[in-house]
Amino acid sequence: MLTRKRLLATLCALALAGLSGHPASAGSLEVSPVSTDMAPGQQSSIVTVTNREPHPTSVQVRAFAWSQDRRHDTLTPTQDLLVSPPVFQLAPGASQVVRLVLRRTPNDAERAFRLLVDEIPGPAQEGQQVRFALRLSLPVFAHSTNTGRAELDWRIMPDGVLSVTNRGTRRAQLAGLTLAGPGGARMALAEPENPYVLPGVDRHWQLRGAVPRPGSVLRASGVGEAGQFAVDIPVAASR
Image (cartoon, rainbow, N blue to C red):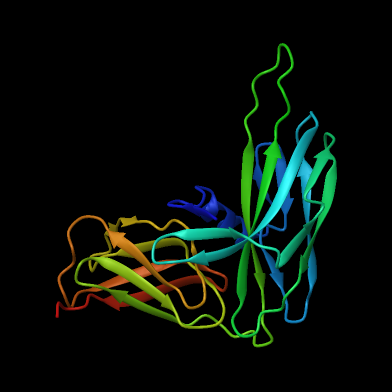
C-alpha cells in the first residue's frame, strides 16, 4: 500500500490540464487523456503515451485503487483495473496505446483509480547528462449504473478548519480552491493539495493565520468540472 502526505505536487496542474483538454506531460512523456471516465457498463478504455524526447525510453504503467481520508490520499495495488501493456519501450517520437480493462463494475457510487505512469531512465552514456525518473499520476473513474452527482456540504469550524463532505455518488473537483474573508482578502489553506473529493469522503483544509470570528461569512471559490464556482460559508460557533 502506498500512502503519501502529498500524493504528487502535480495534481492541481493535472486537474487544470484535464479541464482545458490538454494532455499531461512530465519531462519526455506525454499522456492523453489526462483523466479517464468509464461510463456505466463500459469495461475498457485507452490512454496514449508519447515520447517527446530525441532518445528512447522505457515506461511502466500501474493501476491503483484510490481512496481518501480527511487530509491524505491512499493508493493500493489492485487487480480490478488491468493495464496492458504494463511495461514497454518507446522510440523517439513514438506512441504506445495502453488498454485499461475494468474487471468489476461498481454497484452504487463511482469508483476511483489512479494510473502511475513512470519513465524508467536507462544508464547514462559517456558524455551524457544523468537522467532522472519521472512520474505522472492520472485519475480513472468508473461509473456505476446510477451515474449520480456530487453533493457537497461546506463548513468552516471554530478551529479554522474548512470541511467539505461529498454525500453524493460522484467525485467533486475543486481545482484552485481558495478562501476569502469578508473584505475579499485571500486566506491561505494548508493541505490537501489534491483537488478531488471522492464520494463519501470528508476532506479538511486548515486555515493558516487568525481564525475568523464565528458568524462571519467566507467565500470559497475555484474551478470544477462544470466551470468556476463560488460558495459562501458561515463560520460555525463554538459549542
